[in-house]
Structure formats: structure tokens, C-alpha cells
Image (cartoon, rainbow, N blue to C red; front, side):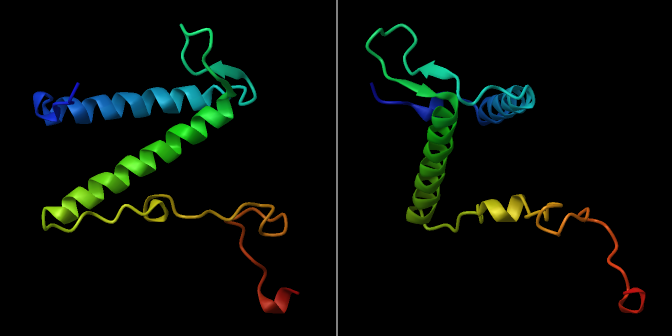
Amino acid sequence: MIPRAEQYDLGWIIAYGREVGARTHTFLGSEPDLHRSVKLVQDDPHSDTVTLDQLMWHVMTHEVRHTAQIALMIRQLGHTPPWLDYMRFARPQVTAAQSGGLEPDADFPEQDDL
């Protein structure tokens, strides 16, 4: 079967993506057991079983692959795709452990105070 993307309204696709994002956020907020076993195909007794952590890594890398495919198609059509680098959207944050136990936003003492 050949997928027919033109059958879906762009508004529906965007709404669906937002719904999936919201459900994912809620799921991750529940602090799931990442070591829990998950059957890849629920109704197939011969299906592989992986940990939830492995399944989530698979989904993330799978999404990256599709994002790259879309960017390539945009380029093949003669356009420049948007910059999709993750670090543009999620700036690194300094943790307390990385800052020697200080809170990331803590003011550092002035030189004279040392």
C-alpha cells in the first residue's frame, strides 16, 4: 500500500502532532519504569521484547531519520529547510553538579569577597 499524504489536511497533521506531544509529556511526567519490558507487537507471541528505554531510543532515532528525509526532500525541491538542530531549541543548562554544587543561577562571589 502506498501512503497518500495528500489525503490529510495540514491542520489535522499539526493538531495530531501537538496531541502526541502533550500525551508524551504527560507520560514522561509520570516517571515510567524505563526498565519495564515492552512487547513490540502486542498481539504477536513471537514478537521481540525490549525495555521501555530501548523502545524510546528507537522512537527518537526513528524520528531523526524522518526529519532528515524531509529536509532532503525540501532541498531536492530547490528550497532551504529550516535549521532543525536540537541545540537551537533546547539550550544546554548548567546543572548544580557541573557548577561545583552551586545552583546554576547562583551569583558568584566577587573577587574581593574571596
